[in-house]
Amino acid sequence: MQVFIVSLMLLGVGMLCILLEGIFYQYVETEGVLHESLFMPIGVILVLGAGIGLVFVSAKKLMSMRNKKIN
Image (tube, rainbow, N blue to C red):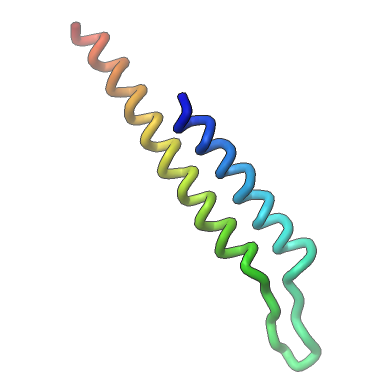
C-alpha cells in the first residue's frame, strides 16, 4: 500500500512540474532561442517513476488474485 501511495504522490508532483513548466518557464526569445527550466525533465522522471511503481503494484495485485483463484 505504501508503494501505491508514494507512486500517486510522485505522479501528482510530476504532473505539477510539467504544468508549471508549460505555464511559467517556457518561452522563445525574438532570436528564436528556446528557454526552459528543469521542471520538464524532473516532471518526466517523476511521472516515469510513478508509472513503474503503479505497474509494480498492479502486477503484485494481479499475481495475488491469480494465486487465490488457483488455490
